[in-house]
Each structure stands twice: as structure tokens, then as C-alpha cells.
Image (cartoon, rainbow over all chains, first blue to last red; front, side, top):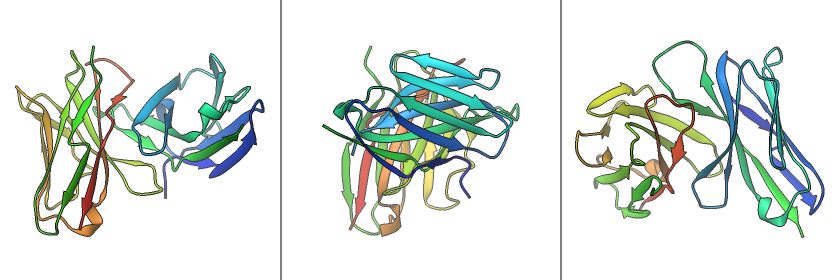
Length: 114
Length: 113
């Protein structure tokens, strides 16, 4: 099964509303990151939260992390049509290993209607 | 400072041919990662390389796939004798030596006919 799983799989909202996406993971982590992917394009890094942090803000983005529940949420406030994209969480393992590989979730497809 | 560059952006191959995907990391970045994204799915890690070294290839299929990051030049992901199931978007990311953040390229979309 996936290390990271997002829910919902798809979300449709009106411009100006807030969008909340959740991510769950299974193993211990060093950090958790959120990425955006516009259709057919590459990934854009949005925000990183470390395992010892509980909340982080960046512009209209707010990320929370609950390591006891192994879950994170991404809140986009005052959404815009340009926010329409797929959003992925990615975890970097906390096993102390040499690898820096990211393990991605399945993604949430956000559609913001103008 | 140019971002991560990948070429070609689109690649079409017939079954049995070879596919070579190139990735030039950002300036100053010595770590390269390759990921594969199947349609409607998230990215799956394939391999992590530093200059002239493969650090983690736990996500690479055992056969037909290989990767290198030579001292000079781009990183290459090579797929020999491609099959239809290899059709996917292949993304490269790079990072500096001490960083949690990976910067992604635009991807190469491989279509196997």
C-alpha cells in the first residue's frame, strides 16, 4: 500500500473558498513536503514541515503535521482558479539512512471553479 | 540560474527500442533523483545518484533499466527493449549536498507504441 495517501482524491470548490487536503503516512519521517503539479507539467515545491514542527505557514498555505497520527493537512485559503492542480504530499524517511528519496502520496486533484 | 532541465520532453519509441532520458541538474547540485509517474498516479522513486555513484537504486526494475551520473555531463536514465508498460512520465530532481528540498524538472513523457 502507499506510504502516503491523500484524501480526498478529488475536490471541487468555488473561487474564494478554502480547500483542505489530508495526507497519511505509515513510517517514521524526517520531514513532510507538499508539491503542486499542474496538468501535464512538473512538480512545484510548496512547503516543507519538519517532524518536530506542528504547523507552518507560507502565504495562503497552512500545513499541519501530527506525528502521533502520522498525518498532515494542507489548507489553501481564499482559493483562486489558478490553484487548480494536483497536490501531492511526500515524505522523507526518518530511518537515518543515506537515501534522500521522497515517497509520494497518490495526490488530490483540486478544481477551483471561477 | 536555470532550473532542472530534462530532454527530450516527449519521446516516442516502438517496443524493443532503447530510450535514453537526460537530466541536467541545477547549478551547484550534485544529487540527482529519478521518479516515474504512471497516468493518474503519484510519483514513484526509482534511483538516487551522486556524481559517479549510485546511492540508492531500490526503486529501479531489476532488468532493462539503468542510470548513471558521470563526472561530466547530464544524468542518463536508460531503458532497454522498451515495452508498453514503460509508458509514463519520468521526472528528474536535483538537490545540493545538504538539503531536504528537491527541485524537479519538467519531465520526459515516454510513449511506447
